[in-house]
Image (cartoon, rainbow, N blue to C red; front, side, top):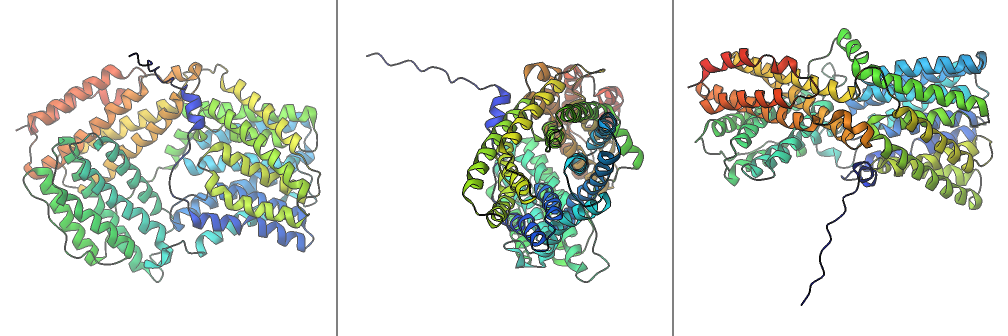
Length: 624
């Protein structure tokens, strides 16, 4: 009997697989509600007052703020939504006056220079990236959208639209937020997620999922760290709840360290070890006391560290007072160095070329919606939205789908009430659609086309499709142009930062310092820098081959760095318990440094690998 042979599955190209992949996770219903209460009511109120054009500007600002309305705490939302809103308002004012007083050539040069600056600043971090995007989009809209309001008034209206969504974020409670002070529901959820991630890692110790669980713990700690960032409330009533949250976060750091050391040893632990972190997570969510915590055995240094960390956590939860070690703030000089370093210059150049070329081409056609072309190019050139080919494909598909959907809706819905309803529903869908760039593009396209008609202009679905396809072509060409210097600057810069953070962490551990909070800060910075490098590498590896080849081997370097930092963590825990290192610890450190030196084809870890001899000399006296 013959059986049909099984053909091997054909693997999709990385760029296409990325385009078809969507993010997973629960729906943030609070953000959905805020989206429904933002753009739609703003434009409806403006129409009632006879100021439809102002309502359109406010709704655009609310839409852009809605894209940045991600899960997290209220305090973090102040910076995450407020800083881009201020940048967008400034861009609206600048674009308006540049469009009024500058000719086509002047406008192109000014916007290209602004694109260069905004692109460089975007390399600083996610908030800076959002601010750079909004300043360019608002500048294009201000220069091209025919509005009766003067530039300064447009800026105020833009700020008011984004500010309205921020007010909703600060005032409205999230679902399930009343277990404690509802102002801190985002912080409680994030900190509880850390304890759950510790329990998940303990359950996976010695198994094949331990590495993935350790990465999930890093992500949970990053999220909690961000949730606790932002304005402090210590001077006001309710500061006790805030101090309790900081104490609970601080108590999670030694637990995470001990769990990582256990995962490094790869010796399975009893199920009892994960019960206590689960109870701590429940206590954070319910804002209650922990009750009795089951103690793990104390048969190994990492288990003794875990037990000690649980005791400290129980005390911190009962006392409810303490301060968490936070990420060290970068100085202005360091921010400037990042912005105008290799990654910032490379990205800034591509933004300037894409934005400037889009403005120049749009000036040639100069139809009523010419500003759509540069505004679309700004989104397409952003690497944090995925690989270039994936972005272009998703943008084109989403625009076509959204434009066709709106054309059908505009033909049957009453005006203006039907269009206001479309804006309201689209605003509510944005937080859900951010899981996939094509879906987000489709929703934003419907919303923008509805706003255009509410502003008194004719239906423009065909024009929107044409402008988007032209912007896709411009960004694809610019993205593959040869640039001076080495390509892959973003990946190189993040790997170099991760190597520097790992070096600082190892140096602190080998000095035998008793300053554990400082050690936890250095450990957090090392793992956070690694996570950022991993994200950049994942995007770069899914580019088309012509671009992906510039960062080949980066994933191996990142994997070795992660194992190196895991080993340093195990060394720190062992030194705390015994005051000495085992020959295994020293051998692992030395071998990993050698592997890193061999694998570092990008030449970004000289600061770490070049210290191999000195670090070996510091580690050997500690070996038992």
